[in-house]
Image (cartoon, rainbow, N blue to C red; front, side, top):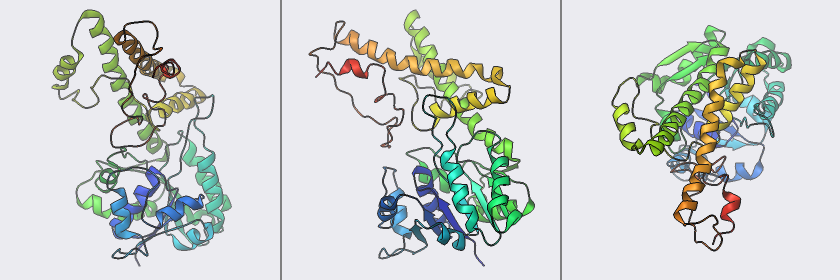
Amino acid sequence: MALRITVIGTGYLGATHAAAMAELGFEVLGLDVVPEKIELLSTGRVPMYEPGLEDLLRKHVDGIEGSTGRLRFTTSWEEVGDFGDVHFVCVNTPQKHGEYACDMSFVDSAFESLAPHLTRPALVVGKSTVPVGSAARLATRLAELAPVGADAELAWNPEFLREGFAVSDTLHPDRIVVGVESERAEKLLREVYAGPLAEGSPFVVTDFPTAELVKTSANSFLATKISFINAMAEVCEAADGDVVKLAEAIGHDDRIGKKFLRAGIGFGGGCLPKDIRAFMARAGELGADQALTFLREVDSINMRRRGHMVELAREAVGGDSFLGKRVGVLGAAFKPDSDDVRDSPRSMSPGRSTFRAAR
């Protein structure tokens, strides 16, 4: 019997994952606690901009003429528990207000809501970015709350999608990482990802802590690379050098590569900024804070670039004030092909209040 899949949380990650699972041939049921979002998705529309996602949804959402009918959405936890063999948890893990630490309340709530409805053996797969150690805690809680006890297993399968390329990254991942504690969990995930595996996507099997650390380590490395080239931009400006040519030259070195070497106003969005801060916070809790002190400088350089943009604009208008000046800001999202303004350098600039004096 073919596996049936549920996806809990239908934001950027969840909506894309649900549509991708349907594209891979599975019967899929997506859940969200926001009825308005479910109503929208059930008509094949998405509450965010992501290239190709709406077309993929309309190809599979039940009730749309010409669709495969393999994808439905609900707000019912009971329906999800009855339906699924494999449950993917794709809820948000934002930064706590006023802290560096990760807010796990949405993940915890999802597990607390799902577990009581697991009345037959099932695999729950976490995809959210969480502090290392979370999976072990959640596995224990899952077994405590589920009527089937230990037959409700947990796996951790971090996501690596890029906004603007989410559909392609999900259907054709450059690697699949799974943290598991049993051969059964690994076997089920190999079945889920049979399509990408047949295309040659690497499949890395590891334990819970390593799977959790893979995502935060990857994002920390990317953030470091961006802040490095922005730091070089500061030196180039002081020395009358050309950071574009510098990046081109060092990018030809295969050990370095050309990606993420474009100097600018820094990184933003719902992942890199909060992930490196949560990583630092968790390292501190584990007594390993000295290992990640460099990330404080990565974050500092990133925030400094935002202020530097304002200073360059101030110089361009030829004075100390923007009062009465015409200032245009082209785009508010943190990157092209996205409408995500979370922690965007463009919308969260330290000079935002300064620009209010402009026209």
